[in-house]
Length: 157
Image (tube, rainbow, N blue to C red):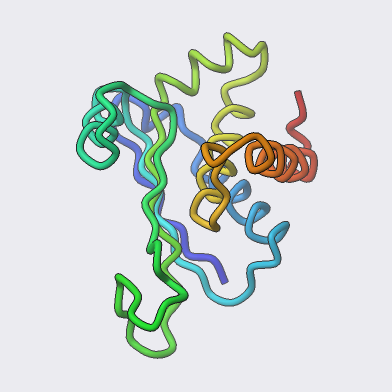
């Protein structure tokens, strides 16, 4: 069971396909063999909010397309988020800039729907431990997983 709370800030609320975000997240989790009940929150907002989140939480004073906030020590003896028994595993939160979605879709020559799904998959993979910033091998592994999931969704380049 996958519980996804998708929140979209104006003026994007009529433009964002929440069902697509849910399908993309579910496909990424299936592709990685994640089982059991999962809880995930997704915020779709603007560059200004992503810029502020990026500055606050990563120390990077610039807008970005997607940010992932997870329980980095979920497998440790003392996870960051303590959950009652028999509740879904809290995977984390994603924040996506819809302004970046449309700009990058135009830049790469594909639809905003494909870009939105791609950023969702990218963010979920970060929550699962993938990190393209650790080096070329990690970046290549993450890219291969992203493209495999996008193929499953029928949203190839």
